[in-house]
Length: 189
Ligand code: ATP
Ligand code: MG
Image 1 (cartoon, rainbow, N blue to C red):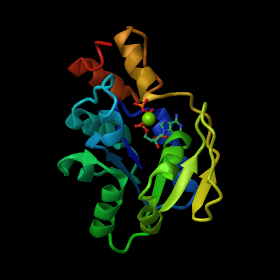
Image 2: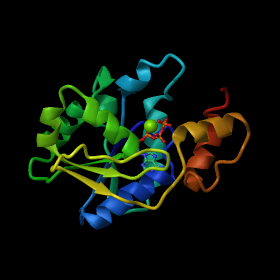
Image 3: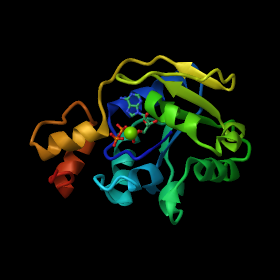
Image 4: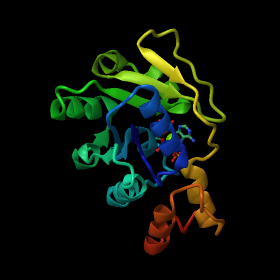
């Protein structure tokens, strides 16, 4: 499951847990992005340091024996493209049957990518429902759709809440609330 995870929240974790159960996955690898190309092109969006996002993802997933975190995207120089993520994971785990988990909004974006043909050959894509977004497989047979409990949580909303001194307790794991406070993340709008 790729993501900016700025910060990771319970919407991500529920999506991962549901897909893992439904598809009987041995492991869910969370892959925090380096500089995501879509978000870099938006001048109003400053992505937090990769190391902070990586550590919050580790904290959030540490208790689950099937959840791990990969550094492939944060260690690859340059912008992050999902095709490179999948090529790296394939190289590191040649025997694995790879699934790529995305929410409905990210699924719609992926469908629109020009070079997505190689993507479908690298992993089986699973799109999960997300409040406020329409989940659509565009008629593709190699994509699965899964309805998951609706978690109306986004990282953008969590960041805005912190900046406005509103609580993020129970939207993100307790350790992540404490990490955000410890490093003073998301203080300015
Ligand atoms: P931002 O608001 O910064 O874009 P985000 O909440 O969308 O953050 P991302 O890191 O962009 O989180 O998302 C990573 C992946 O998790 C994407 O595939 C996204 O669709 C999915 N996702 C995020 N939040 C949810 C949610 N509440 N329910 C289902 N899927 C989600
Ligand atoms: Mg997003």
